[in-house]
Image (cartoon, rainbow, N blue to C red):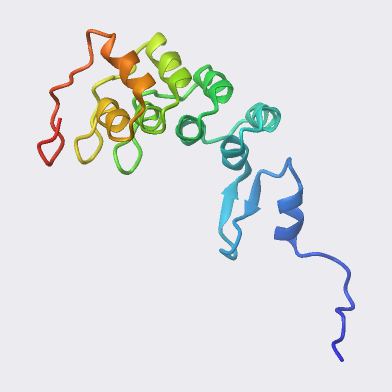
Length: 165
């Protein structure tokens, strides 16, 4: 016969997971590793909670911007572009920018948003030399390819580290 725990209280990480306004949650299956709740909200596309987290300040808006581009959340990208500290050309550890992620995943609407704004480096290369154009072509995103080819500033001759254009 199994005994039930006499304490009906929950551990703190379990409470934080259910609290949508918590600034951190325990990452599933990782023990004590804290993960900013803001980034979870961005990945999920939860606009309301993204705005609430931003109103509290102290958020990693740069990483949030990359996540929003990667996951195709146009409205969140637009929100984050108005935040101080977002650099559209900032690269992650593998050299990808938000523009790389949008091209790689075929998020044409976000590609247009970024190209309409100021300062995006359309020919930026990641750590293996791929541009947004490489990533769009490699993943068959014809709508993104058409948008890029309609511009006169995309360099279609840029080679990656394997010499591919």
